[in-house]
Length: 386
Image 1 (tube, rainbow, N blue to C red):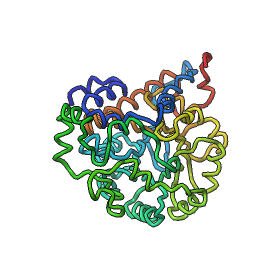
Image 2: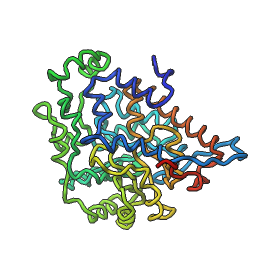
Image 3: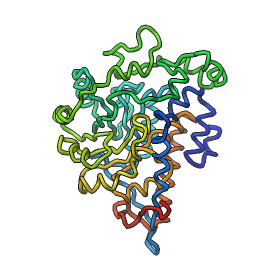
Image 4: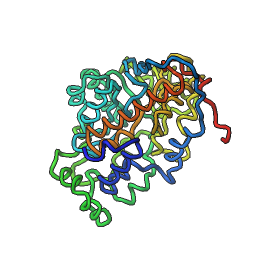
C-alpha cells in the first residue's frame, strides 16, 4: 500500500495512521489517562538504559526463538489484546492475527474485541491467547473459559488493573461512543477522512462480538464507552478469584497489570504461570511506573521459570533487547501494530512486525548476542545521566 514501503519505523506508521483516521478514532489509539504522564513515560523509560555490547562474537546466525504461554514463538514478541479493533480497519482482529501467524508470533484477542473468539480460532491456527476479565457476572467469565477451551486457545491473560475505567480525557473531549458518533465537534474530521468513514458506514456491523450476545450493550443506540466498560468492572475482585479462574482454566495463565514483586509472587501462588508487567498502556492509573523499570525486581522475585512479559512502551528493537537483558521473557506490543493496521490494514500490521523483528535481529548482532537466551544484566545498565 502507498506509503507503507516508506515507513522506516513505528513512528512513521503512527504518522500514516494519524493521516488516515478521523481525529477521535486516532485519539482512541494514541491517548492515555489524565495528563498522559505514564503514557509518555512507558516509551521514554527505555532511554534510561544503555546497552553494553560484546565484541568479537560469532553472530553469523541469530537465534530469537522462545516460548511464551507454553507456545513456541519465533521472536521474543507477542501482540497485546486491544479492544474495538474494527474501528481502525474493517479487517479488524483477523488481519492482525494473520500477520502474527506469518511472523510466528503469539496473538492475544481482547474480550472487548470485535471478532468472535470462535471465528478467530477458525481463521488462525497459530498460538493464541484470550484476554479475560472477571466480570460481576461470574457466569459470563466461566462461559468465556469454556468457549476458549472448546475453540483451542492456548492461554488466558487476566487483566487486573481495571477496577474502574481510567479517565481518558481525549475520548471525553471527542465524544467517542460505540459505535462512533458524528457529533458537531467530530463531523468535519470524519468527513475529511472518507477512506475511513465510507467503509465504516457501509461495512460489517460494529459490535463487541464476544459480549454483545449476553449484555446487549448496543441496543437503543450509541452508548458511552465509559458507561459500558465501567458498568462491567467488579471492584470486589481479589486473589480468591484468581485462584478460581486458574482452577476453571487449568492451563497457562498470566496476570496482566502486575507492577510489583509482591503481586508477582502472589500471582504465581494463586495459580498463574506468568505475569504481564503492564500499566494498561498508560490508560488507567496515570503516574504508574513504566513496565521496563519493574522487570528486574519482578524477575528476581519469581526466579527463572515463570513468564515475565513487558507490556508497554515498545517502539524499537533495542527496547526489546533491553527488556530481555533485564529479565523479561518477551515483550508485548499494542499501539505499534494498531498504527500499522490503521495505516494499511493487514499489510500495515505486517510492516510493523517486519520493522520490529528486523530491528531485533540487527540489534542483537550489533550487541554481539547470537542467542537471546544468553542475554543477561551484564548487557544493560542505567544510563549515567539518569
